[in-house]
Image 1 (cartoon, rainbow, N blue to C red):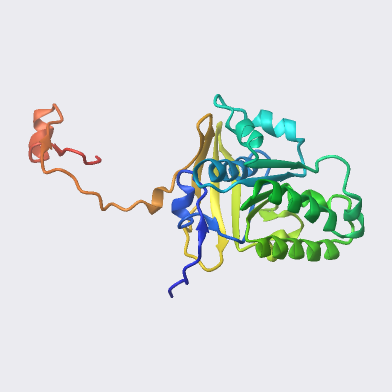
Image 2: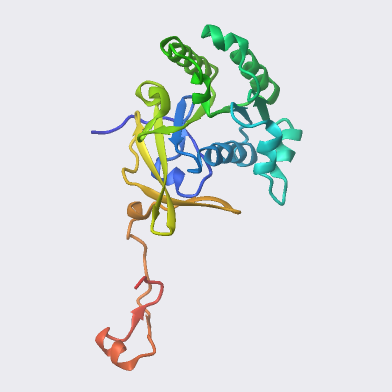
Length: 267
């Protein structure tokens, strides 16, 4: 089976573009879900930062969970790149973390669309992130109408041609409130597990419509340099090596190896 070619928006995150075959689906929606501390917001914000910094694609972050000042503080770096991008109107943070939007109570996201639309217009954004979108369901007993509103929201974002990313929590290995069943073209699951005293974060691509992708659970790190995903099982052993032999320093071992190991090889 051959997948049709779809346009992709590179994330600029080491390893992620490799296992997704180029990034997130351009002009469509990606859902990233996982439990607390798995790195959902970090990956989403990196997607915006790299888009504005390297690919000429400004972005909008809609935060349902944290105030804008907290986000800026959380992602503060030595070069203050987030603050600079905000000042230059290349990234806009739409803070909806306070009191619920009154229109949400009537299962309408029209007011939210207006706010996002204004932010996209201000920045000429081509990337939009809705962080903790499942917060919309807090206190809502009848979720059916809100599910329908989210469908309309995604269609509306797709119609504007922006590449959107939603983040949500994890409930028993599935996105909270059944979001995965219908919401996105690409779905990514993040976990944070412990083996004894050692914690490891993993990423798995649950689905990617219209595109091939890596099928494994990939470990990744978050540190002061950003995110690094290690697509270990996708590496190809097709690099060239020298025919020059390098001594191991142990004569008997060199004899066993026929003179040593090849320069540039992995042992």
